[in-house]
Length: 171
Image (cartoon, rainbow, N blue to C red; front, side, top):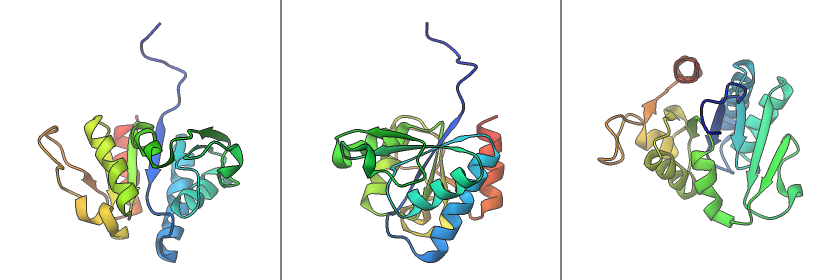
């Protein structure tokens, strides 16, 4: 029976680059810790870079980590994933990661991140951009992508602002 599931935990999909700089990696780990502390489930693309750093922070803080990997092997996920979903979809798995959260958080990012942001936007997910990380997060923070929605991608220049927005959106 469809309806409000009172046992489902809220999910945050974190999207961003697989090859970020050290500052962004450290911030991603802090984001993972924050997600765990708020009692939310972390969903990522399950590989390296910010996905692994956030997963490490979340897992170390007692949170749950879901990895949506592009291939067919469970072993393709980083070592911090508790649940692995192999899609066999390659880059097309970005549709899933782009809509797998009640809220999407983006950091930095190149073309793959841009596609995930676009899917999140089209499917009505709130998108929070850590604009200080540059990439598409910095480019799109505070902007509407197109006419489909009246809101914008939310600019979160700091971890404190991200926490405030997450608390507001996932109560």
